[in-house]
Length: 535
Image (cartoon, rainbow, N blue to C red; front, side, top):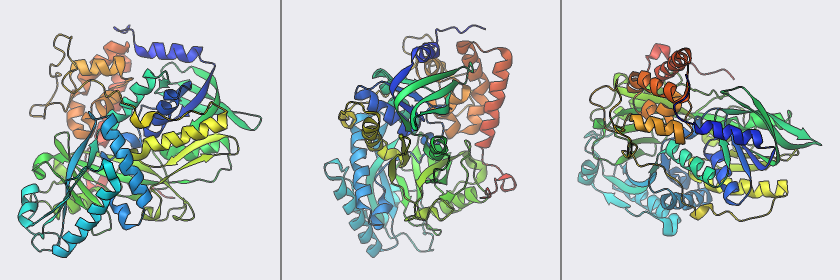
């Protein structure tokens, strides 16, 4: 079958075939890598970015969907980390307003003294934001707490009635959508970005990293591209690339697993988010309105490996359900969980924070590090979505020095991002473009599953190359309702096959792979939960 549309992928591969050398190669297409590609391209450097899977397929699409300073870091005295993150939050609210927006949070308190303590802490949080503050921080009495979050139980986890609380504003975002906005904007500035294109090897000559060998997944062809400098932005897999440059490199990353549950919104009516800063096991608990659902998270479990598709470990789903049940009048149960997704945080390990040897993740740094190796590989390690832009700016500063590139200042603090077509507008100019896809289960919230026009747009303009790309990251269907995404997958498979020229056999294989993946996003029984990997 021939594709029905001259696909953008062919044009990208033609550019790759004609590219012998660039100023900067970026390996990794998550938040950090896309930020580096945009920063370097916006400064006028020639850029190639390669990503082995899809853009944001790993950690960057599996976040808690918050752009925030990190309230809990104030108690640790890490004011610089909080101030930097709040400054970056301000940049994102201005540069990507279609994808990043303020959200009200409510923090319950047991008594007046705790309320006042929270008010002081959140007041300091607001003060650190300076001109980028969002306001809205105020005390709530017991009646105000019930009005803001009518779904809370009459008695708190300690068995006593609510003592009021504090409300404040932070920011929420679409993580996969923001990654695609970075990709579009970097591409508009001349960067060549290729997903489903793996960096097979680093080219090392005269003791220096000076290029990459990449392999494009669809056709299997390999390409060698020289570079003045290579940036390692592989996220939680960053140590793997560091060892490609230097097999003796000491590991610097300590992955930590965060599990999130997606449930129907009727468990938390009211529209505000709930933040519990201290659960019984010392974690922070979030319950956040998201795309017509509620997101509950998260765990913080160290693990020695970094699988592409991590799954909840034994007990993690039950821990989150139990934590939610201590607060909610109508708590979710396993059978009502619509989707379960797991992200791996690329936390920095060091002697100060306990190393990369399995110590508690609460002692591991959420900050980032820019490393220049003896072989001139620039690695961006650690960090979080909120600070991706600052990390990228620092990485490109280092890359300019390493590669002998012209030194130019970054324009990204005030650079508007291409946020794409607004939801519901995909079908403009296409007959029947917004029709509901056949196979969509009845009763689902509008916008949960994509229209036919949105699927075509994802394939033609937004780098999608698979059913998963469409249903996990161009829409968020897999993350919002795994069963619904599986139900509509055969129809999406037909559209993808038609657009990309897949054979019938290829369509069946791709569909089977997606259905297996969707099954892993269902809340499974306790007996089938994953066991912790051995170190």
